[in-house]
Length: 397
Image 1 (cartoon, rainbow, N blue to C red):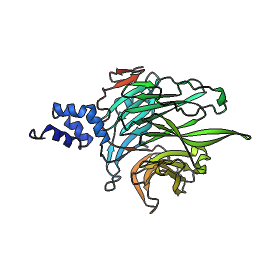
Image 2 (image 1 turned 90 degrees about the vertical axis):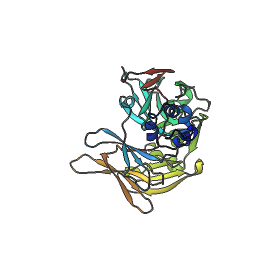
Image 3 (image 1 turned 135 degrees about the horizontal axis):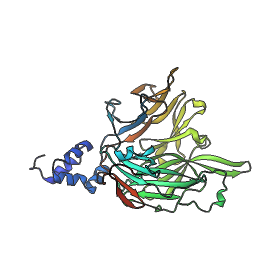
Image 4 (image 1 turned 120 degrees about the horizontal axis):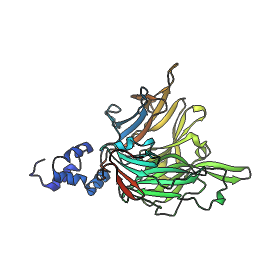
């Protein structure tokens, strides 16, 4: 870029570039590198980001069982042919027994254990291959308590947060006999590198049983949960949604329509369609599914938008235009079952194939964008009890 152009104008031009160009431009000059690496620039870029939405697909390769990560541009002109393969940063690759627990603002959070067996979350930016590790403290022992972990980026501060909830997993325990749950809610913020209690005192009910799946929409985390009420016929359970505001750190509850509240909890899952919460109900005997969407963020305003009655189909997510992304399991005599991923138009019934084969039931789909978040973080850093430790390139036992 010409030296005759004032640096302020250069800055405005740079702000509009895609992430891959910004990473390359960091090597052009020290002023540009200093600008792009600065926290104000990173935060502004994330807030004003006009990058096109992509879809992050994960699946097991049927030939070698290796986990694959592919990003696809969610663009009507090229979809689904503009594919980009990702490789996770080394810190994430060395995480054992890991799974993705959430995505937010272009970051991906995995949960597993390090080489010594400690529970650890790893927050990754796949676009710039940067990652930070977070040791998860105060884990319960025994069979009385369990934990659920959620991840999201606070929209007001661009601060990634991890939320750990300890809950009672023993449904037969007398809830009234439990005055409090040890370390019931803890929040990790990357800006401080430490865990703490949430700002708000509005903790979730001690009687909630949490589903592991979560989704974040407009700065709010959502979990499926199960609660019960005592009746003359015993304890009757029902499904609900538990919310956590990433800014105020307040918990809330959303009640579901009876058709969802009274369903078997293992037949429900949650997703998002644009900026709306979606609940997916799988019908008995794998006979299809129904999709409900919450309108205008109003609790109990869930409306069923379509139903598909066909076996071996599962909804994995949605395109930005609202079309559902469906995993279809194919059965071949004498061979292992395989899955394909397709987009289904509920109106025209048209099907668009992603042209990816995978091991059966291994697909996961997440909305994704490119971001600069984590660019200002040190390489290979792990946060443990408020202290940041730089690893040499391998996780030590």
